[in-house]
Amino acid sequence: MAYWLIKSEPFKYSWEQFEKDGKTHWDGVRNYAARLNLRAMKAGDLAFFYHSNEGKEIVGIAKIIKEAYQDPTTTDDWSVVDVAPVRKLKKSVTLAEIKNEQSLSQMALMRLSRLSVQPVKEEEWEIVLFLAGEIIQ
Image 1: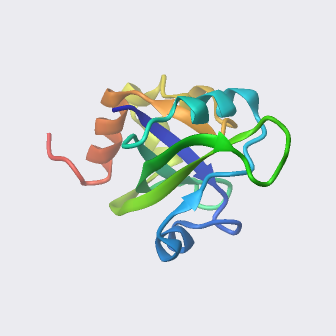
Image 2: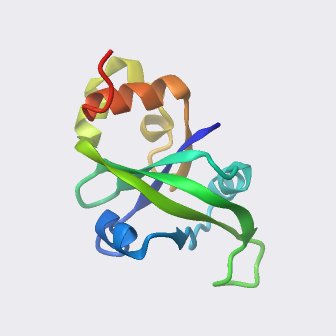
Image 3: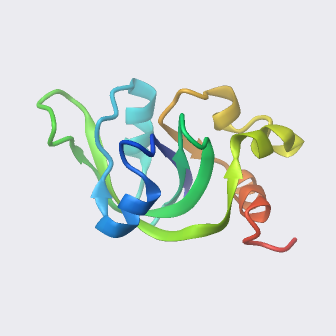
């Protein structure tokens, strides 16, 4: 299993709307690196759901339920995956908290801050879950 982080501006598509919908296709990605990440996702992989611009925090966990296919919003060569909410985190993890955690200094969120779909290493995943109160180390 691989881990990912997907970003959404809450005024466009919030965690609350995602939970209400029950699933969605992750569309609108128009960056080549992010497209490659979408295409690398496998069914069963997990992703942090990050509120960008407003809030700047990881708020929940999503699951990839369908692997990459043609983005239905365009005829150009862009992809989407289908995702479903797993659960809201016990406590959101803010960008400031991530920046203050030395062990997360190499996380893609720190190095590639504008990338909307990015990989998360397993050890980074566990640290974020710990910061969210999800895992006791």
